[in-house]
Image 1 (spheres, rainbow, N blue to C red):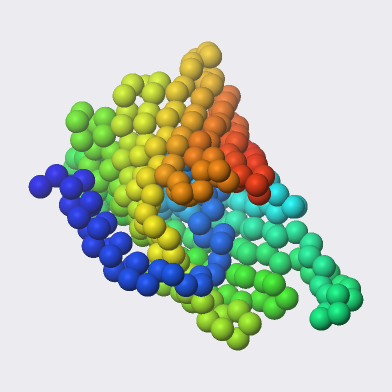
Image 2: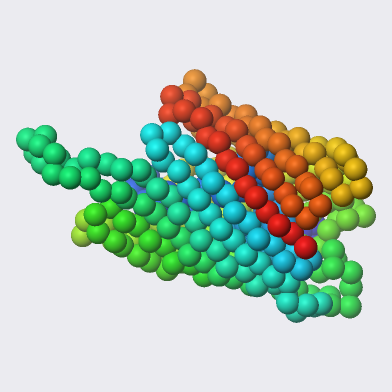
Length: 312
């Protein structure tokens, strides 16, 4: 049976398990936010084809694609002074050994005024959420085969920190797989489970952090055109599908321009408030990569993401 069909069947079973009672309260918004504007521009469809250090947070198996090292930094600007910044580093440890990476991302909710029951100002506080993570990717099978014909496993462990007035923490982990490429290395499939464990205590109550299961595929139509598709099942919502497109234009021997767009069925019932389409652009200048994405959150405003990446 085709590995992609098996993944679909497991995805259905896992979704049924995760969503027996998804209506409820969950903590830690930051775990759902993708730090990479390249992915955001493609409606976050990228778990099969992301090859920089930020993949530790997206699909930890994908850091295996880093040839030597990658240094990634990004900033996301939301509404009302809400922003998220991230930094990731990954290094390939050698032929057939694997790749190690670590990173941090921090979501700031801005400055909030604290008042009492009579609306008297008591001061201000600055809530935030943060994830510190480290992980590893390695080949599981076929070390004598070409790299594209091996199964890759990746995993990470992460410390999740939430601070409102008091600080709360929990531990969690992600696992990811990339499967042997199909159709002359033109079709890639992958599977990810994020936030396998973890509960966080806020205001004397314990809240679970939502698990996410994803299956993804990438179709490499040519050296210049890629189509990514991800199916995501969040524990606290209904499944949705996202598809992204990336077109690259060669400017010179080592310089490229990337044009990206994507569409998602997430929030499909609320199209008047949310736009399902995202856009982005990227520039490669030697070993330096600059990426930007633009997406909309309806009445909440627009999201602008920027990143700088060094790859060797």
